[in-house]
Every structure is written in structure tokens, then in C-alpha cells.
Length: 277
Image (cartoon, rainbow, N blue to C red):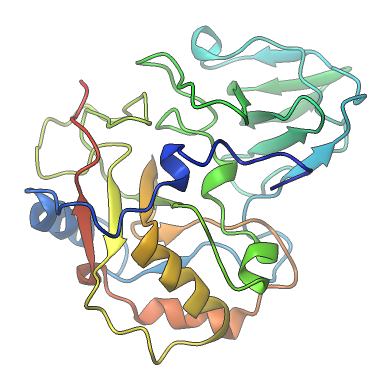
């Protein structure tokens, strides 16, 4: 729950266990391509105690004023404004400049990409609105505030859930190169490559059942348990094996650094659907 709202229904893809799903027939090829196309071949927490690290989000009341949103990149694939985005909403540091807003009462999620304050509202490259009580996907071929057409918030590692000792959803992660295709719940690809060994957007991977996590502790252990049970979803092109978390100064960087010892070869892709092109 975030702001008294569910983060999608219990049977939503983000909340689906994958520890008993069959291994994808191309799993070895996918993992090999991820390992060979950027990064050092090990897991990495793309968040930490630095307040400029990770992706922030904000919860607003149902009375939050709506403000105009002007789209300047992918407006034809964006949900039109206005959005209830505070003028002082936190913006992700770095190039993507994501803004994530949960509106209580209506339980809607508003997400922006390349967001910049503009006049009485915001300008953005793209934007998407998700009903947190629904499993509805974006139209096939549409992006969102993320390249895969997925919502960002449900895939973030959040401090509160890790502190409680349990993550009950899949995690968002990036890979350097993807193919021209996607697997639902993703709805968009961001590549022209037809190489079948490259992962499609929306590909689900899990930490192999036989990978020993008994030597890990603290925050890293909770994250690894989630990766065995719920796995992670390819959501964007970026540094390979980087998982995404919410901005929070309470993260323990020493704990999170343990993840850097988990090799990409410890993961396997699972079958969750067919590739859409």
C-alpha cells in the first residue's frame, strides 16, 4: 500500500510470483547478451543514501490542484493533462528527470518523463496515468514515462518494505541493449534490433533457486529474496543489471553493496508470455 492505495491488484503482473514458472528457452542467450553489452556483469543497486540517487515519488491528497502538462516528445502516446503534480514535486536527478505522483482517494498514479517546471504547470517528454486498482495496460505500441510502457512506481525497491523484511512485487531493472519487441505487461519497444538473443522489453528474470543467499544480510538479503520469488522486469535501456529503488536517505549503502557480488549468470529468464512486435 502507498498512500492507502494498493499498488495494483493482487493478481497484477507486478505482484505475481515467478518462482515456479518455467525457464524461458532463450534464457541462456538473453543472460549472455546482457552480460556482454554493458556494465560489469554484476547486479547493482541504482539507489542509496545519497538524496540525489534513486527515483523519488510523492503522495498527494485527492484535493491536490490539477496543473497543465505540455508534452514535447511523445505527446501522441501520452495521457493528456492536467495532472495533480505539485509545483514543488521531487524530480529524479540525472537525465531522465522522472516525476511520480500517487493521488490518494482516486488511487491514481501519474508519471512524467523529462519533467521540467513550466509556467503554471510542467512540460515533459511523455506522461502516463495508471489506475492503481486496475490491471489495464497501455495501448500496444505506446510508451509511458518508461521506455517499456510500464509504470515505474510498482517496480521500485522502497525503504519501508525492506525495513519490514519483505518485498511482495517484481523489481524494475535496466539493460544496455534490447530487441525490437515487448512482452506484456510491457507495451513498447525502444530498439531497432531484430537480434533474438537480446532481451525484449518486459522480459522477466528471477534469481536462480540454487543461488545461495545465506551469506547475505540486511537490506541486500530482503532484495535477493524478492528476486527469487518475484524476479525483475526489463523496463528501460540503461546500465545492465541495475535495479531501481526509491530515493531515501535511510538506505544502508554497505548493505546494498553486497548486491555487487551477485553475477548476472545467477539469473534466468522465465516464460510469462509471447513477444509482441
